[in-house]
Length: 311
Length: 311
Image (tube, rainbow over all chains, first blue to last red):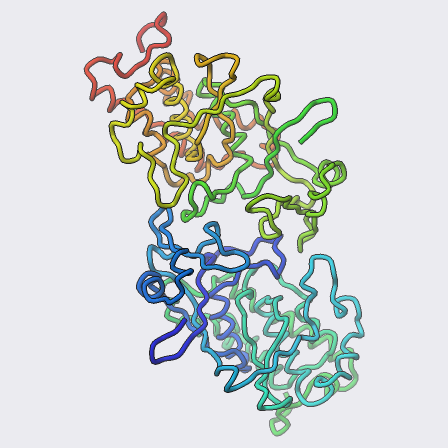
């Protein structure tokens, strides 16, 4: 979406009600994208202290005045129609989920959506896209190597750029974020090329998180479980968010309440917030298991804050 | 679906949970088909005394043993897959709603479906397909003539075969059936050619009925409202089904409870059953309005049971 004088933002429209859970028979690569997942992922990433997801905010859009009447995409205009109950809908053109049957509809013309900050143009700030070592197969039948080889992390640890610096614990941070929000769709992450290999990761495209609150997906934690490594700063933050006064669900609820769409309805339903607490316990238990399996704490804990007293 | 030694039946699989209502932004021609609508339509038609829908019964099918392993359709076999939760799913090949995203899934291999009696082969008993005079436009933008012309019925009444015999009141019976079950998809009806024009109608394809219980669709009643004609036998039956001991919802609940799938879950949820009573009141009121607009009862009531005392 382009704004005169303000540049662009990435818009994702609402396609699913907040209380709806993703159909259990849908594969992660066939799931819908959720605008509230994009927003909630930004908040969660910030609360975890990572700050690797560019800001995302909710907006109510007037689909006629702010899209149909001003777009320069004539093909998009032809896909607008009035639904049987008088809502203004459109579906655009794309390879799947773009049809009357899967239209995006205003109520009657106001549509919820997420707007994500666009990163600087690739010509100004080229980015490297890294295939995640724990990428899924994106196939109904094939398994990825990490799903069957329990020593998979040994190989990763010897492979650049995971053989030095913080890249491995960065990916493990990412897996903790993704497990908490149940995002199975993290096939790639990005970095800014100008900063070389010793730089922070960027986590784009979180629309398939928060699909189901009633189920956890342990395989997302594979990087942590298989490598048994975690940043001390991350562990400290997770511990803090396990304590009653800073409980993750409470901090998330408070943080999300500041989004403009919270006026319409809470960005995450209570079952999704409770799932965060339940999954955080699972992460803490996984780290505990690692500590018991290893003789030295330093085998597990990557100390990125040595000047501070031991956690 | 073919059965060795028993001929064939028309199978429609479950695609939607009983409590789910059709998305309000979907047009009637984009709606899913519902197996329980096929079953409930058969029961309703019988309870109304029409008996114009061939028998439909519910069945639990083993999708592996009764479909995958025995089908001769090799293309169908290739669309079988296991869903993330281990259910066996398939989608077949068709022009829309046939994809992984819209697969039909067993739990884990048992699938609910409706089986409708197949009529005799068209070579043995050819049928005539009649376009309904009150057919919808099947377009998002165009309206049918009957939607804008309030004198539309005058034209229909002068057009064969509606100008004589019972054809007009047959179509009005059909509109009452369709209004009660909120079926907007009645574009055609059929007759057996051998019986000529003075014969009963056949109402096939009722899978898009019972999509929404919270909303009624008054336009389905247009034939009754615009023509102000109704069979006396139909009126008597509707009156009976308005009385507490024979309340339509109670009779339907009792009738549907004898279907094999009622063991899994009621074929229609209570809100759908209540909607039947509410819509029946609307039909009775429409007939009452007709009687008040016309001087003679016989202008409205088509007396098909003259030997019986006046209703």
